[in-house]
Length: 115
Image (cartoon, rainbow, N blue to C red; front, side):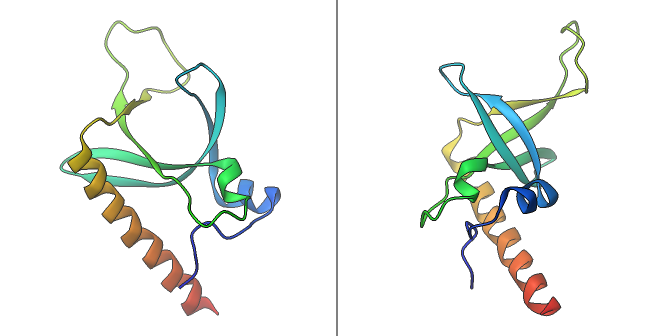
């Protein structure tokens, strides 16, 4: 089984994943790779990994989960109708992480089948 943070170059990164920019708690832009969208109990969640983490040799990679929410009524118009909301519920994050690991395993099996 391979590690999800295998070193990949910038071109492969942009070809394989959508890259979005979020602001961290200090307002600093952070480029995140959208790994997958997970559906749980009628809601959609994105699994994000920092772009620089995917291009590093680190053993571990942090995964961030955010809920996709529809644009609030009366909110300023945006380019799309979806926004992301942080998740505070630890049990939900654990569930999403388990779902994410299943997704990673399925991706690895798919790659193994192609080889």
